[in-house]
Length: 288
Ligand code: DO4
Ligand code: MG
Image (tube, rainbow, N blue to C red; front, side):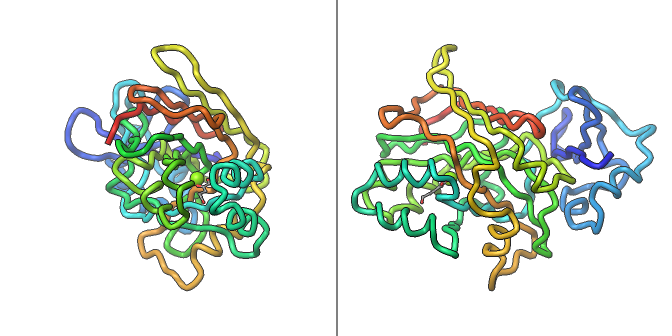
């Protein structure tokens, strides 16, 4: 198998286990085969080969519906690229007269916008609540492909990310970006990491997002990852310039799905982000 999905999960006790998905229904627990952390896999010279080489007979298997998935991240810092899609640039130019030229310029500049998003321990998993700030009036999800980068700066896999954002705070003044982007439960990742993807393959993939309120759909949007203006290597290369990540990093690649300007998230809304070759990241909204 060239592509493989790996996750972290609880199976009835407090031990975080590492699992390999064998199909859409089952997870094999590879902790018992000596793979106690995802980092062991991500740091290996050949992550897919390492997992393919395990003798899985005799290892515990679980139905995905019987386990509790944890975020597929351990000690990595989470960073995010911005204004990588034309759609993101135009949305942000409309949101703020004050900062419009900054978005316009960064879209065309050699150097991308890259900002710090979250520490690993602050990331939420699929099934957990994502946050909207109680002092924000205009909150949206940002559905994004997330690149998983090891300590050598190599992109070894990808997952789905939600870069939750307070658009009124960001739009008021660019210097408020960290407050618009970084707060409790502002980043969701998961449900698992897909190893062994190529950028050429991923650029053919579609990101789909829906938001449901009281069981009714209130927003649906989609974009192709091929619409990202910059290459994945370019984004990862800028992140790793003059900066080392001893535990690796996760880099969100920007959003190309923007709900209409009169839309804001409410408490209890359910946000789903699907990238079919990876999976579905699903979170309900809580006020923080
Ligand atoms: O500059 C604002 C943030 C942009 C962003 O997060 C995105 O385009 O996804
Ligand atoms: Mg974003």
